[in-house]
View 1 (cartoon, rainbow, N blue to C red):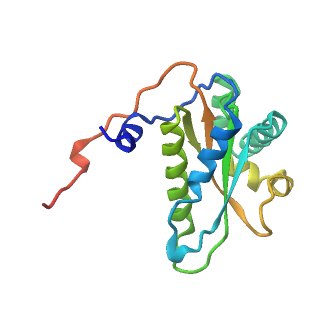
View 2: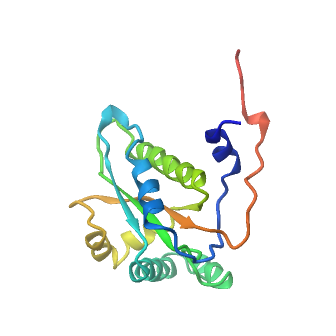
Length: 186
């Protein structure tokens, strides 16, 4: 089978990382894969920030937990009940910042295409991943401006999405597909 299709079929959302470090060249390769994503009229309205610094990861996690507690107390309690790890002990994260747009081009769609490239590149290198949108709360909360500065977001840019990377504690299963959701007019 083609390795691209293997990566697509095997990928799943890992929510229990071992914490073991991943090689810097693997993190760079995954992040660089996002640069190959297409975008509307080739605007490339994103910045890709690869992070494996434990202090920055801890800061992101704590800011996310503080923002989640203020925004959704029940959600915060659920995170605490499952171990209190918003980033699931991942040793690396790639944050995709987005340029706000008022035009007809969907920046969110462009960010989603980048994320797809990132998770499939990670899978092809034997890394597990999880897409996280919940960190948006951290960037919108009281720590947001400091986080954006620390991650070198251009002025006025926003959090788009992020991908956690690492090795799973134990292998997970891909989600079950529903063939009924495919319509073919061939």
